[in-house]
Image 1 (cartoon, helix red, strand yellow):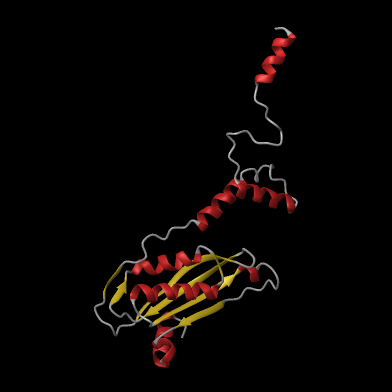
Image 2 (cartoon, rainbow, N blue to C red):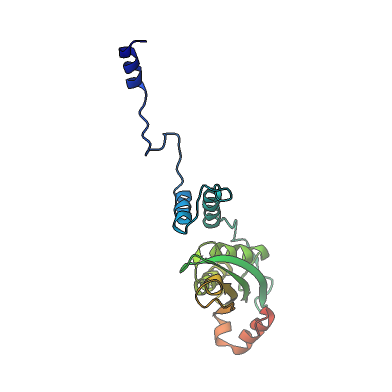
Length: 205
């Protein structure tokens, strides 16, 4: 091969710069963020044990934020409008929007049906739907109450959440504590006896 032919062949090849990924490389910005985080805290993201962490971290964030609760609107004709319905003991995990640290909360819901009752599994789906986003516990309670009221066509809704927040347990004061928030609407706000009955059945009396 002559020098001229070699030069012509080299000129025909695509130029790949070291600072640019090849065309088929699909960069993941979330994984890149994780790699940068590991470097900033003094870790080597290429060492054994961390090499696949950015990919797993990115997959978890997408799994959390893309959560699909499924159908939440299944409701049935109410058999009686004077019954108190309580669903409790539902545990959800969410993320504190102030520090991006997890918190878990036990959710209890009470309502007095009007013309519709909600399918039992839908309470858990609604609670999980509101938990799978950056949250504060107060808004978590209010959002669940809004959905229950709309789906059941009643203003008589109460939601209680008891949560432990790792942004307090792991940082700052580093003291475990339980935070209780409640939303009381309709009869649960205006009638102390209705509120007391609901809280008693929720285990918060």
